[in-house]
Amino acid sequence: MEAKSSRSDVAAVLKASRVFKGLSEGCIHKILDKATYRDYAPQEWVYRQGEPARRFFLLESGLVALSEVTTSGNETLVRFIYPGDTMGCVAIAEIDHQVASAQALQACRIWIWSREAALKLLHEVPIAAVNLISAMIWDYYHYYQQVRRLRTDPLERRIEWSLLELSRALGESTAEGTVIEAGGYRQLAELAGTNIYSVSRELSKLEHRGILRKSRGRIVLFAPEQLLKSA
Amino acid sequence: MEAKSSRSDVAAVLKASRVFKGLSEGCIHKILDKATYRDYAPQEWVYRQGEPARRFFLLESGLVALSEVTTSGNETLVRFIYPGDTMGCVAIAEIDHQVASAQALQACRIWIWSREAALKLLHEVPIAAVNLISAMIWDYYHYYQQVRRLRTDPLERRIEWSLLELSRALGESTAEGTVIEAGGYRQLAELAGTNIYSVSRELSKLEHRGILRKSRGRIVLFAPEQLLKSA
DNA sequence: CGTGGGTTTGAGTCGGATCAAATCTCGTGG
DNA sequence: CCACGAGATTTGATCCGACTCAAACCCACG
Picture: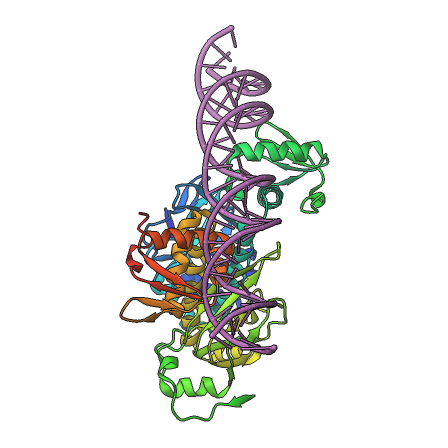
């Protein structure tokens, strides 16, 4: 299932990723040589909340959803992971368990380092370490804001925000607008920290405002720029 | 106001801090030589949300409160900074503005690096870089949980949690219990993400349950272990 | 057609924010 | 020593957003 790196070409997305920024191709090769990669099928779990955290991940292609289960048992979609982003940082800090779950939403190729290999590399390649610090701070920063929104924004704004996030992750640009094949409101509800009933009501409001059109499992965003303008 | 490092003794708290863990005394000296330190008086601001973020901070002694203003204009106390903790990491990732405010609650001594000096040191001292990564992940992790609590826990539990945080930060152990000189409920309200009215009501409940006693600007915790046990 | 999911809608409920007002505490100055 | 005022605290009344549940609805598929 997993394969050693043996390709002489490094995917452009990896060269451009935040952790590898400023590194020579040779250096990137050296780092990838210490890793394995694995391809994940849609819906497959990369890791689950609570399981031992001993590996560090870098997404080369595809899309991953990071979600967590709250104490009250609700699933929350924390954010999406895009190519070039890292996952499972907690392994590096010797936090024993994953604090979230990661699930492939599309076919993904993911590079994997053991905790030990990752630590060794960070010591050997200071630029990578500093890059990782920067990357983590950005993640932190985005999480920070996301969470503040969830706590303080009213439902309407949370839904609008979630729509934008979802369209960025899953949207297909077409002539009539950005099409989101969401297959149900559950994802949207989890992003906005609410339930499918409230999602339905808010989407109806937005439809009346002419910002989108919805049909079974499919949303077409006409005017994304109108969102968050608190009409 | 600021002073160059020239002391031959390094405070024990710095040697034991998460960023300096595993570094030789000489190495720590080298790092501190690139810094200045400054003493802050209680209530003094270390930095304010929104101002340019160009410096990186390490708290040697005292206590700092990290707070943020939400979009709705409410002040929220994010967490306390203890000796050995870092502040202002965003400067390293070249995020232009502080995302939170830091205020000294007690007399503090704080070490300060410019962004450039910090970046240079992280490149030169890989152990420090890896340490910083670990430290940040821990911060991340704690923030993560804090925020999940704020979002999903009912008021009662949020207040109980906040009481424990506050007693850890400001509590004085005495014969009758842990005394918290809070000087009003505002701090508690900001920690719990609520208002002083709700704080008052919840504290009254806890007083009836015999877990604490309150008087003007002062709370005595008798049975902290009873908190969060959801009686 | 019928059945099963996704979707919509209405009614009920509740936690907790808000507002207003009463009450208390303590320091201050007369 | 007492009266006073500024805050802090308490309490009651009210209100509102949003969650919950139940039921109706609709579409797509077999």
